[in-house]
Length: 144
Image (cartoon, rainbow, N blue to C red; front, side, top):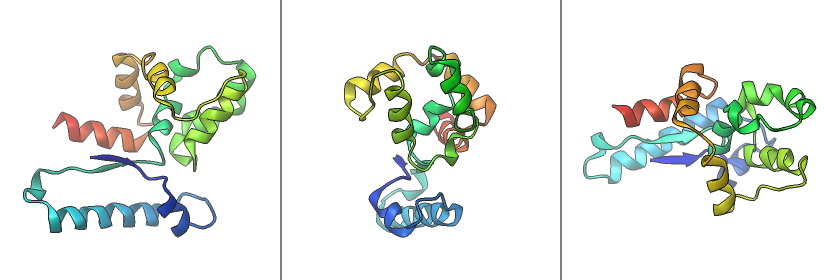
């Protein structure tokens, strides 16, 4: 399974809108406890959280941002290098798209447009780079 860590529940538990490694571990532990209690074959279930959202994975893929203004890329380079430090990645992506007179609101067509431009090589490079540990964990689970 895969789920965004960013959620209303997370916001309520981490009131200062920062990423808490302790809370991340708590969320995963709570999820694993539910799986252990309720699943018939719990040993066959793997569960991952995208930290903080799957959009953080996209921030870590340079090919998505190649056509963006150099100044925008420079200003946001820290987020591209450490995307899992962004509390609300979808909002950052919206801001990046707004710099091009666009928007990102997680609509199906917008998501398909973004992921349609990601190649297998981009995913392989992201995994090798280790820029997004939650992506790497997810890949390890689906490859095993």
